[in-house]
Every structure is written in C-alpha cells, then in structure tokens.
Image (cartoon, rainbow over the protein chains, first blue to last red):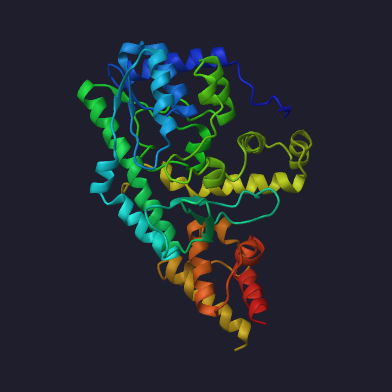
Length: 321
Length: 85
C-alpha cells in the first residue's frame, strides 16, 4: 500500500449510499424492525448516523432521543434539535437527571472525588484526563482528576485506583441509563436502536459496555473519525456540528475526547492507526506525518495497547463450551 | 537476601495476589513486559503505583510513569531500589 496524506480520503457520496442501503437492509431484513431510534447529542457521530437513517428510512421512521443530564453542555440539545428539525425527524426530550439521582450517580461520583480533593463540593466542575504527550515519551495511560472552582481555579492530581474506578463506574450509569431509555422508545415503536460509535471508539474501547455500546446495529463502527467528518460534509449535517470539538459530554468541566481517552488529535491518530494496520514501516509513516520513526512507534504501541486492554468490552458474555 | 532480592520478592507477591488470583505459576518472568504479557492494563498500572507508594514510602511522579520504570519485574526492582538508594 502506498501510504500518503490522502490515505483516509473516501468517496463520501458512494460510501454514504452504501451505508444507507446496508442500514435499510439490516433494520428491515435482519432485525425485522420498522424504523430507527437514535440517541442524538449534536455531536458528529450521532448526527451522521441520524442523517443516514433519515435518508434511507425516510424521516417519518426515525426518532431522535435527546437525553441531557446536569453535566451535559446546553449546546448538545440545541444542536441536536436544529439538525432534527432540518431532517424532519421526530424528537423526544428525556431529562435523565432525576433517574441518575435515583441511582445515586452523582453522590457516588462525588464521594470518590472527595477522597482525592476533600474540598470538592457541588459548585465545582470536574473531569478526567490522560497524558496527551504520547508521541513524545513512552508513557502509560494513567488518569488524572481535575476539579475547577467557580472562580476558574483548577487543581489536578493523579487518581488512586479506587477513586478512579468509582468515578468511572458512577459516570457509566449515565450511558447505561441512556441505553435503557433508547430501548424503551425503540420497543414501544418496534424500532431498532442504532448505535453511533465510530472505529476509534469501538476498537480502542471508548464506550461503555451495555451503555452506548448497547445497540442493534452500529453502521459507522468500521470508519475512522476522519472519515466520519467526510460523511458529515456529504450529508450536510451543518458546520456548527462539524466544527464542534468532540467531548465526552459526561464530565462537567468539559473533557475533550483527546484529553480523556485518545491522547492524540484525530488526524495523527487515525493516520498512524491506518498505517499500523497496513504494516507501513515507521520510517515511511514518519515521512508522511512529519514525525520521527520513534514517535510513530510510540503511536503504534499506544493504539495497540488500548485495543488489547479493551478487548473484553467487545466480547459477548462468555459461555462454557 | 539482598535489598534488591527482597524488593523482587515483594513485587512478585503483589502481582501474583492482585492480578493472578494467587497463581504463582502464572507470574511473568523477571524481564517480561507486563503489558505485552497481558498481566496488567492501565487500571493495573494505577494499582501497581499505589502499591509502590504505600509500601516504599515515596511518590511516583507523573514523568516516572514509563514502561522503562514499571513494565517488568526487573525494571521495577531497578526503579524502586534507585529511588530508595
């Protein structure tokens, strides 16, 4: 394979057409369902998926569910509703904050945060980050907790494992409640739940098992984020959505996906990963990406570690054979 | 038993208990990479660092969180004895 700066370019019109056909065939033929339910957040991936579904099923057979909670950005709902209006699909607003309060999501999370920062209270914002210098230095993906006072003052500390695990377990209740809500709306209409994970999220494990990972089909799980951007242009989801910085929309201090999980910008990560998959030598990839071969090797190793470490997320429940 | 032998034994016991359900036969070789052998993941690294800090009474700084310091029993012995030294 000749690796070059355009290696991830796709014929977006052709790909969108093929995906639309596959989605229709899977929902009608394989799943025997009558339409699609999609959680919409005004982010790139859910916008592309909802636009694809509206195109192939007809807007009258697509329902977008908006599920904000108290840490969500207000932009999420506005952008999602604007797109839904342009596509002509129905929407449902489900505020999941009371449900999460019932499950003690916030109390459990805050209890763990206070073990790291005793001064933390509900007026603070919080987020989790990992090192973002992964090409400069071979480093493990350890997790930092940042809290932000209302004045904007920030404090960051590496988390002990018990705090990290509890914060993530509590926060994952958000994605799991969203999945449950999506299935309610899907089942009452005999529709399918369409997942919105792209390849970066699906294969590196940036999703919650039985949370946003729970869906009947995942039509863009084989596409790099850089390719989803091209589909977004093709499907005209809007410059506000395309230009938005991808975040987790889970932590109140606005954690970007790069600082929370990937540790690298999407262009370099996707290009490095594509090169690694196609066995492009570090020297050849380095020349194309203006990196050193050593930086490429670090990038390859970091991506492979994430794929290996999250394999269990992609497994079905194990059975005794 | 030298100080380094003692550290090596303590690390092996910790890894066997926490990551291998007490099965000593599964303990990686002294120079084997934990990550490559699939013994620990990124949460495991946090567990390992918490153990080191608690057991040996020093802080592991962020820029010390590298495979060169933490990714094998040999690397850990050198790192810990260097910090204690």
